[in-house]
Image: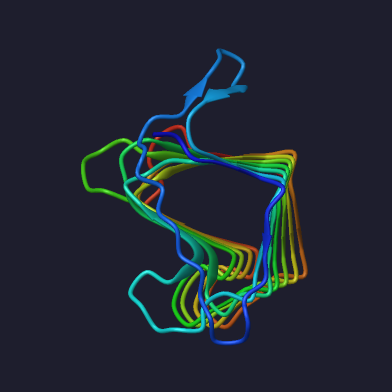
Length: 206
């Protein structure tokens, strides 16, 4: 069964969490990358989540699932805005605002973790990643073992207590084009971007 969320705003009381699960692994796009079918979160606002302590905590969290997130706002959460792990396919985030989220671990705005020896990827398009913070690496975004493609995005005023204020990336390819990084800071390396173990065909063009 596909999940389709559109125009939803869920605003829990302080300390209350809302949980739902994407259990569908297939989202279809046409040759131009336009959405055709599958699980989608669109025109939604997700805020004030993260009142409990769980592993891989995020306001939106999914394990080995690959929904399309479009035209949505994920902000003011006491956890990563989006936390995805054990990915084996492609996640697309488009035309969205991910801001003012605070993670006690890595990836204040977005945390993406792929599986060993499995091709996975994240496409971040036409989005704003702003004023997120993390106690670990990647104030705005943390990506590990997943290829990353970023186009026409702005990373602004994200803060990491580790490395990669705007973005931290490790162990796969990364391509960043037509994007802006402004006033991101890190206690460790890479105020804007910190990347380790680039694979072939990585490109950063700001």
